[in-house]
Image 1: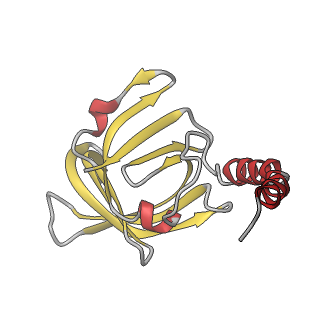
Image 2 (image 1 turned 180 degrees about the vertical axis):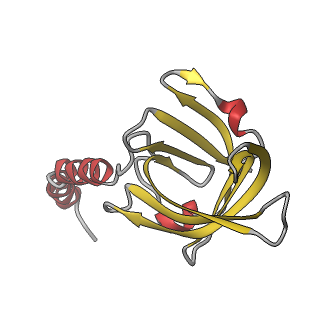
Length: 172
């Protein structure tokens, strides 16, 4: 059994570690803030948070809301690194390049984290048949890099490098 004096001595000794604990927690919180718009820390891996289907809910370019240009589109990230993108109202210009047509198209490819998981790189291909001659198949390869601004279980905010376009994706 401890005496009251012994208990006070142990508490005084323990209180010396309280500032060290506070400094360690602050450093942990600051060090884990990988994305500019949060979250500060997460117990789920970046791969598990990004791996889902994301609907485009907001987009702006140079402060102008352009969300309606992306209505119905989605990005889908799988844990195995596969990627799909639905693009609605995709304008294609077909030979002899006087035949413009608009189609809804799904692209497939791969994704990977880069720059210590602060960016995501996408390699994907749009494949579509010529609407006037179904024996002709077109492929358009795309390589994009996006800065991750926010990555939670429910929100993914991306900004394209070199532009002021910002998309916000919300998992539904």
